[in-house]
Length: 116
Image 1 (cartoon, rainbow, N blue to C red):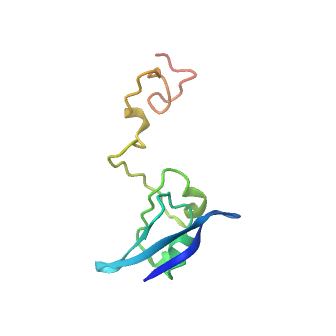
Image 2 (cartoon, rainbow, N blue to C red):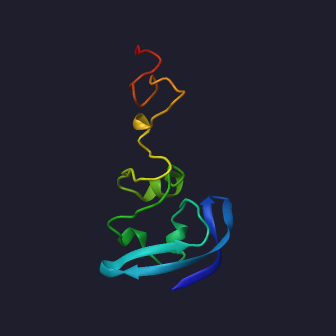
């Protein structure tokens, strides 16, 4: 099943230009949305435009760093971050910065009071 030309909601009142997306139904009722434009997933509309009932899902995996929270936070019982190989990891404490002091959150709990 595919939908062409639908705008992808970024947040209420803001939309991304239309792209081509396809809904893939895999084994065990796993739904995947594939898109032609590389972007993060911001809002549940990405799924619900295809008729996917997110309330019926046990897990929803969203490829996004932080931008998804406004749209998915209200419907999530729990949010778990997953670090995967790539250009940058969300594990900021382990990024090998070359010019930044190691005295920053989350490496230290309170960088304003903890000493180096």
